[in-house]
Image (cartoon, rainbow, N blue to C red; front, side, top):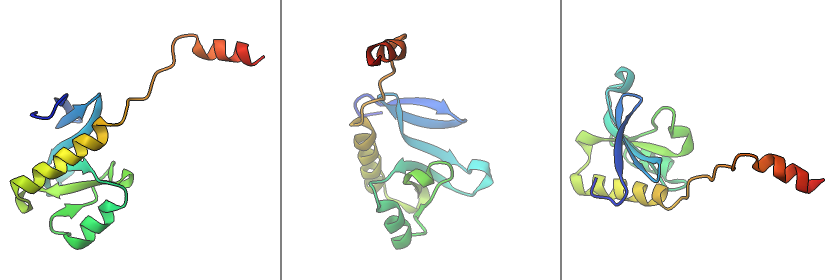
Length: 116
């Protein structure tokens, strides 16, 4: 919560952290009895596989978001400073992306009319 704009909300029954309306970290405690007490964070492009290969006792591919490059981090297997660095990196990655703009009401209709 010390990160600018960070908000905590329950999402899917788990404490989840948002910036600019987008998730950057999620805490899981034995999610669907998988045995992990962990956080899930987005990893930089290509980093997920390397992290898991180099330290499989610490990192794993989480369900749902693993396909999008997120990584699970086993909390009992990581120090506070390293965990903080991962969370800060996730906050920067997600916080720098602008939320998708929603089209204004009637915008599609006006666009079609201009195209004719």
